[in-house]
Length: 255
Image 1 (spheres, rainbow, N blue to C red):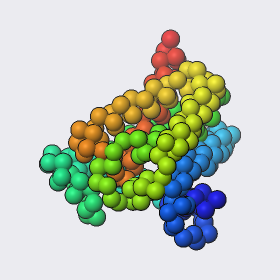
Image 2 (cartoon, rainbow, N blue to C red):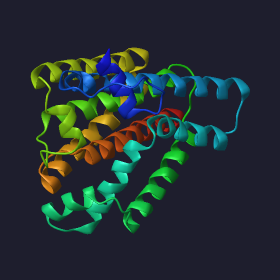
Image 3 (tube, rainbow, N blue to C red):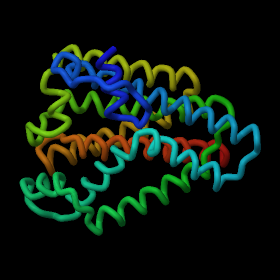
């Protein structure tokens, strides 16, 4: 239970009791990361259901749907997205890119990429249809993204060997952690497909493409993963899932 509290304290803004960061508790904290996504998804589901019931317009619906995961996570993953965009846009050596990730200053490319990301994600939320099983598939998106992010964190090499991500993964039994996080991935993916083969399959396709890009990019550009890169993946994975669902819904509507 201490690991659960630490996971929510680190990866969400939900109020949690103060807990000492001991090696034993840190070793299992990342395994609870998908549960943070479940809670965020539950709040997102509540908003989607309320917006459908009250016939709220697409602009307000999209704005709140975009805000919920960012607000509940405290923006920690969006911060990693911005830092990664700065590093990638520098076109410097691998060592220099890793230095840029640690730099607390925000560069111009981070601001530009963040603005474009929020604009595109907002537009996608305005376009998505939340009727029927699609609402549940979309609500599972945050849990699946965090399951995949955690799985990559304990599978791919750490680019620096230090930092916040290394603090969590260092004491872990990686074999057991991979098994638990893989179970979370299979569980989320299975439920999505069971809810709707079309919508769930589209969301999984989007997540899969995000995984392929992240694996190639992180290995080639940084030589592994860091906490910032994990946040970058989570944000792009969530966007890719909603994008794939919107495209699938539009294709079906045309056909």
